[in-house]
Figure (tube, rainbow, N blue to C red):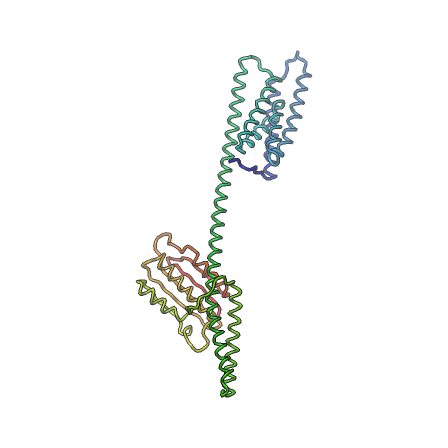
Length: 388
């Protein structure tokens, strides 16, 4: 699979060009110094070729940023062609061969090999070797150098392709996890809305019943009428609050009519878990179960029941055979905290998969509270605090 062109940064490009220029000057000085004409030979042709070599090399180095960032093929092939007449351009040409080979496209590799072969032919025509037998060795060295540069480029391209593939897999896994988390949040919102819908229907039924009594009972004394009107006002206010909450969590499913569990249902939940073989203890403050009218709101009560239920389920699933502790503490004005904890064994204790915990976090957020979950000193704890 061809790899898209990956542009190096401006600073990295500048460093590569500077290194290519320095290496080119060194190659230029070594080659020109080794081919100085004899004293009895006219130096003008040599000087002309030397200046041509120098200026073409400068042009190649000037094109190198373009080959590295914007036009790796066009500018790169031009630099390789210039290396046929310029030793100063040779390091830049080697970089271009590697850069083009890293793209891993057969047609570009073929074009690079053709241009490279033409450049070698031009160089041999301008600077012929002394013996005819040496041409074979020169061509063999040139072919070996091309093969090494192409292999280096292909290796770089394969590494970049692997990095891109791993990054795409990581992005895909992250998107899948985000989708699962969003689905869990939506499911929990729908569940919350269904629970609140039931409470709202109950309150509206109370309003209808009391209003009907006021409409048909003509023998009621003023104090009873005042008390019933007050009940209607309080119930209507709570119903309006529940309705706003239902709209806030965007209910999408038709609600059923089954009564929803509250804090008072937690002891029965614990007894059910104990009957199933779980060693479980419950510590709940009596004020949370008092029926004096100062108990938590229905929505808060349902949230606390779901926290206890999810915590017990996680303990039974991920730490079977270990004792479980459920605790509910709090007071009006201070909030309510429900904590479910259980010991875990092993160097790396198993933790819940996170979807149920996402639902608990969503409940805590919608209630204006906080959520914590994790293992510490061999104890896995799930704690939610909500206002009261």
